[in-house]
Length: 210
Image (cartoon, rainbow, N blue to C red; front, top):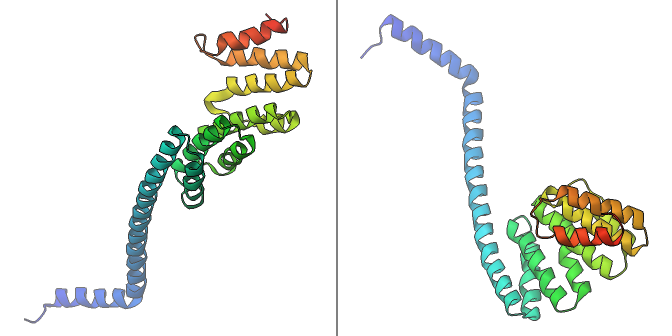
């Protein structure tokens, strides 16, 4: 069926528009479709990573519960290497460090904690790792290293714990006035009903800071 004049004009205008912008439109549509496909593939890959990491984390947790240090080493390594971008990586680092610490291997305990400090995507996990690593450094009398580790602004909900641990390190160095100030800050930062409040208060009282 022949086109009428109006339809022919519209068709000619469309042809002219397509000749001018057709390739650009096809390119834009292709880019959008590829972006959507890439986003879906990325989401699928992340989900796959999380599932695999959760399985490995459960195995690690079971090994920690059974105090099977050999299995802890066997499962924690791949968890850190392959799934560092997942929350299970830093969670695994924290419980692996606890297993090594309970086994009396401070050197082994330090490694996963340092890994969590350097690689964890979760700020609370990084803070916990710093606190626990600083505690080990306190036991090792590496006081300056411990203080440096705690000298960060990012403490999240652990501001009180950071101040308390700094107080311990300062006191161990014989810096009683600075330790007293740190313990006071720890008490100021914690909730009135915090379980650790009596302990920190005891330290403060011993320094004559009540």
